[in-house]
Image (cartoon, rainbow, N blue to C red; front, side):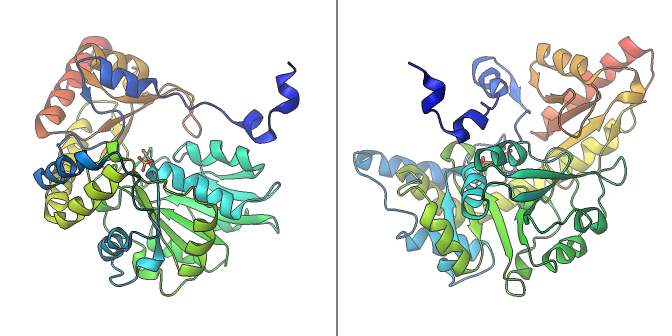
Length: 372
Ligand SMILES: Cc1ncc(COP(=O)(O)O)c(C=O)c1O
């Protein structure tokens, strides 16, 4: 069979995302500091809710569109109480990326992305025949200027997508920059996957700007990466179009009940986020003391470190930590991160942070002749 003759352009353009780091996380006895998950278990109320639904798993869930209770809770959490029609859901915010692309991007359309950013943003555009236009940071702390974005706008530009704070560097563009982007009238997507660890949300701009879409996830501060739930907040006209392309029943039954229980226990989410923020600052200040380690200021639950000046390679630090039981992430010649100099540590427990710091310090002393 000449398979190529039958396969769609989209499938030919697709790439399989390498998720081996998650496999390692499940199959080796390591501390998982590679995927920006929360290391704390779900709230006891979530665990109870999931147990209570177990004997109904023979049934389909309610669809996210008709599940007003879930959307009401999400609207409330997003600062828009009483506006469930401003919400729709995806199987993780990963699916939301595709849902938004399918809603807005046709072949040949341009999307402006910062470089680096969350890597699926660029990769998934290929499925829709869209063209990525990249914006480079203005400095080595991954700050951006508004003009670097607006200068790239052409008649073909449909959308600008930002993660705020940004994965992988943790930088959070100022709200004034987001406002400037919104003023262009293009579709502006702000991915707030890490917003609970940052300083502010762009949600207060939703009433003012009809072109703003905000994306959220249960995978980070909510500590529920396993349930795969993401949601977007935007005005109902946008939500209706996104629902038109959304796969019916795309959110599982366990996910619905776990999400509702998690939001009802929002204090638990806030308390965990506060612990992570404190330990992020601790990690940042301590890693900076190791000669040659330059952490990038972060508003997320991770810190990316540039180790160029230490004379060590990010990959060797990462491999050493893995041998010591800590799985972190390194970026070797990744998009927007050239060379072998950047590694990223998800903030785990305080003990994880202290142990990782000690390991890096000892490794740096032994291998680069440095003294901390
Ligand atoms: C910025 C950003 N957006 C979206 C996602 C996807 O998250 P999920 O599909 O688990 O909601 C991630 C995951 O790391 C991320 O960093």
